[in-house]
Image (cartoon, rainbow, N blue to C red; front, side):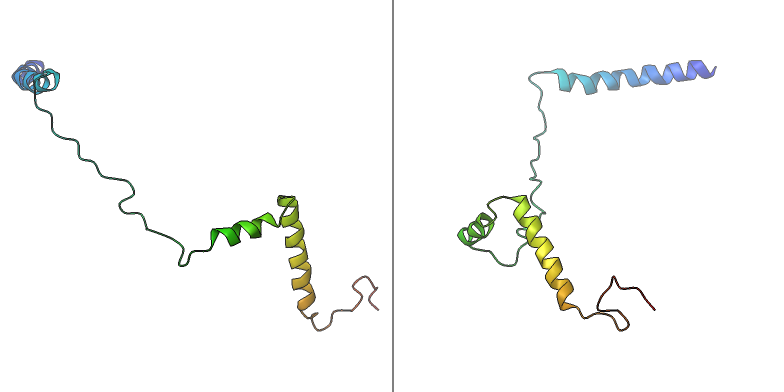
Length: 101
């Protein structure tokens, strides 16, 4: 009995399915227009507060003729300079390799 009820419901829906499919397959049928919305609509217009002169930025980068190695050397020099500026902790020896009494 339950199978018969499901079959009857499926047969009642068949004309609706046929109507829904004919509009999509009919070349003369009307199709709703596709709405275009750019993905960039909600993105921020800029993340930098100020703009730099590109020639000055290019000259700054051009100082590193050997590329990444020059940057690594600069970072190492900055770390040494920063360590030299910081005072030694109170109780630290001037000679860190010396044995403690």
